[in-house]
Length: 133
Image (cartoon, rainbow, N blue to C red; front, side, top):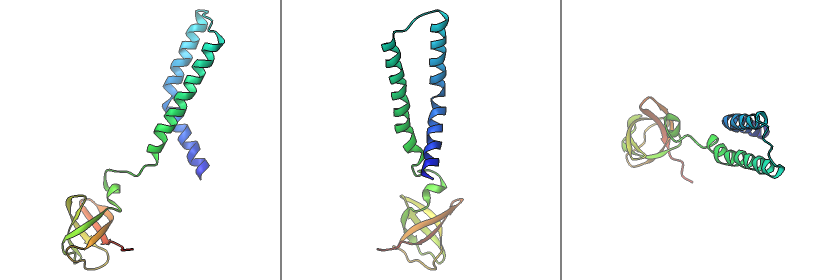
């Protein structure tokens, strides 16, 4: 699976860099058309710079592909909060500094107890008591 993921990541990076490759090809085509010769050291430096661009783009962009989503409903799952109005099974919780309508999946939860978000449907959270270690 890791090889499949790396291949997909590299393909995405290559597509992102496709416009740079097209511009480089057009510049080389123009140089060839006007019969302008480039010295070998200049070609080597240009190839190394393009390689560095590809590598740096890969190192900067790829981690963002696998980062946990930080906005929207998906970001709420797993967050922890506190009960502000008893959940029996419905009530109010405070998560990330905001008050939410919530429903408990494990029966009644009293005011002040710590909870963890299980799901989010529209503007209502489904929560469970926070597991203590």
